[in-house]
Image 1 (cartoon, helix red, strand yellow):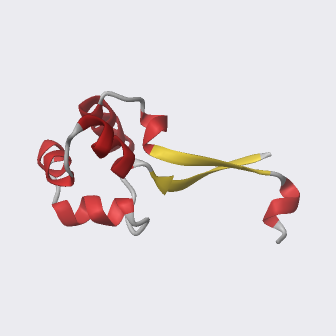
Image 2 (cartoon, rainbow, N blue to C red):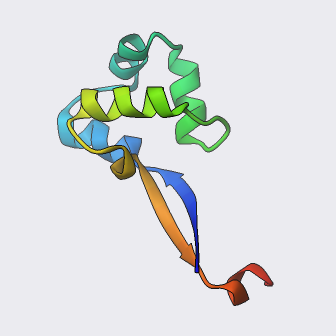
Amino acid sequence: MALRVGGSRLPEWFSRTNKKQVDLARHLGVSESFISQVINGKAKMSVEKMKMSADFLGCHMEDLVEWIYESPSDKRK
């Protein structure tokens, strides 16, 4: 069984914490556009930025993304 990263769960955490993309962008020292790209799957955060994001949002790093388990037969499709 393989594990891969799916979509971003940042919007869910923004909603839970009443924080916004701009708040996280300022905290990380990145552009709001970069956060939007992460949410849309067009960019990835470094491990350090993920940890800083998780601390800022009060969650664990693994809570920031969907995790998809695949069997070897799923990969062949």
